[in-house]
Image 1 (cartoon, protein in one colour):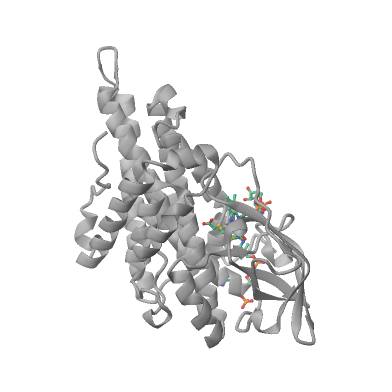
Image 2 (cartoon, rainbow, N blue to C red):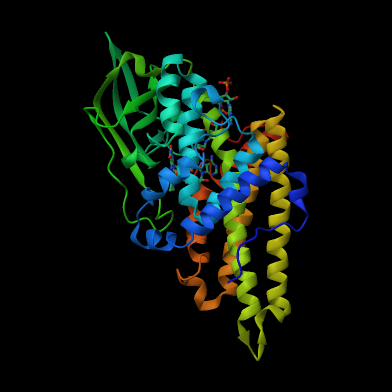
Length: 389
Ligand code: TGC
Ligand code: FAD
């Protein structure tokens, strides 16, 4: 198959700076050389490619937009988005890993933590020496995290956590968990280190999506953590939602990477596969599907780029992020399904990346706010009327 060169129908490259293109191309090469050749095996065996973490760290993929004084890269949001796009071209599991590390663990420590917490954790997380996870969702509280039942009670010089989290990316391999719990009625964030007595993180097995990602439960049974493990600037549901804005931003870009991989595979396949003595790419119905994919990817790219420019300018509202997450994941899933169709029976084989991306995108549609939750967030933005209350 022809080498992957991205999708650039509208000459989007010309809207990127040299540095942004360089970051994108570096990650693209890494994904082509190191991820693409092995990821189907990890998907099949349901293992996360841990051996890639040091190399991802060396490439600076966890050093994110946070300031250099904490060991981070201070990169702009468009460059960060392009990193997410390229990683997800490899597999949603790699983008998930990086999203959680940067947007859901480093961001809350940076935003809500003490200077001591920042100086201790951020350089270690940025260098990949430590891995983090983010525990918001509970078995009975997914779209409505405000109703969570996990509790933290203050004792003399410690906090005692009780409750459970579910569907937590990286849970079983994390050194530190950012855990959201209620103190009386107010939601607060805590740092819980792996190995703390009363804390367990069993892996969730039998997933048919994001198989190359570790997903876990977090269980807290009278789990005692030091008083200083509270993230002191957290207060209310708004705090975790601020973290979700960062991760949703990365997903809006990442989903395009998965869509591009499927589109590229479908085009190559349609040109090579012959039926009725001619390439199937010459049939009008197949062409219509390819045109639809290209149109939607191109529109998604324009959305993501302007989203990034707004974020870099400090003008981004979280409902704009909702629109991009909702749209780009939906078009990526649609692209994956169309590509699967074009590949016929080969479309269900892991010999091609399409079915893997298609299965992964079912999770991406659900996590970080389901498609319908983002519809309702936008519905409220338009009408001023909340569908939630
Ligand atoms: P609501 O009353 O609307 O809001 C509570 C307070 O928060 C403010 N707010 C936001 N602030 C910042 N960013 C946002 N996106 C915000 N959305 C709302 C709001 O103004 C209010 O502030 P204040 O000052 O008045 O207190 O809250 P609600 O209970 O009605 O629920 C709102 C809703 C449904 C939108 C929210 O709960 C939601 O987004 N639900 C979806 C849950 C979700 O996305 N979970 C994701 C879990 S993490 C994950 O999936 C990681 S996957 C990672 C990977 O592997 O890549
Ligand atoms: P529910 O909230 O039960 O929703 C079920 C259905 O009901 C959905 O279609 C939803 O749209 C619909 N629905 C719910 N409320 C409404 C409404 N008001 N109006 C209309 N329809 C509604 N969470 C974390 O905290 N950290 C993680 O790292 C993390 N990683 C994940 C990794 C994977 C692979 C997956 C699959 C999930 C992960 N999650 C994580 C959890 C994820 O955020 C939740 O699954 C998601 O928020 C949806 O919650 P739920 O699964 O409980 O579905």
